[in-house]
Image (cartoon, rainbow, N blue to C red; front, side, top):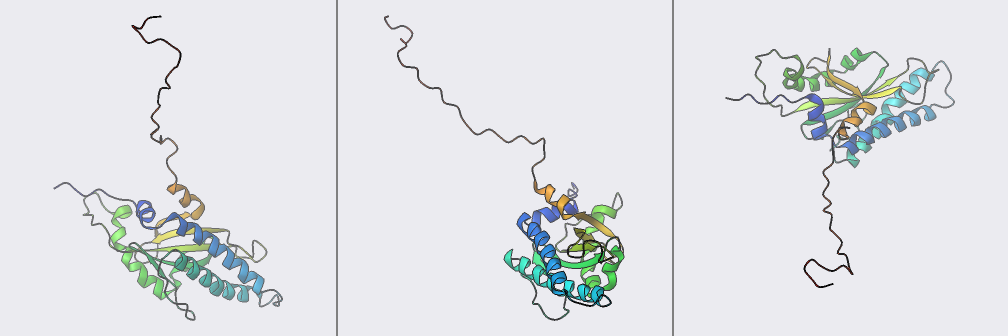
Length: 216
């Protein structure tokens, strides 16, 4: 039997996630962070980091929900601290914030850990042995992760970067993660790809010229 071709996690993401959805997430999470910082205006310095952190959670959740709904990704309801998720193709989508570089913080949510168990089916794509059987996955989980400076003195109203990230089953490692700015480039045609020329030239008839064999 001929083995099934191995896909890649980026190709699966691109297959199921429309480019417009990914672009909407970049805009939504950035605008949600800006609204959170604006809403914290006037807070005493001693409270400010905590207040901004809480407001980022709520304002970015609201923006995430709107972006999911606008792109037909069936978001779960906004309800207190409940995790908001959406669904596109085989991917369940979630989001969270971290201080830049602290990727292990994604494990702090028990709900996110439970979600990540579905990614066991993706692990053979990047961690499997040579003879491991590959079965095309039917479900998986990806997160949009906003990375913030650890200090409000640096970029307090916006993430330093926003990534799309696919964890392994226990969220102790990442099968794939990439800044959205780089991931969006994957939707573009390869630079060496030649577009087919579908234009068929038509010869213009010349007038006033005697045809071959006719008298002058």
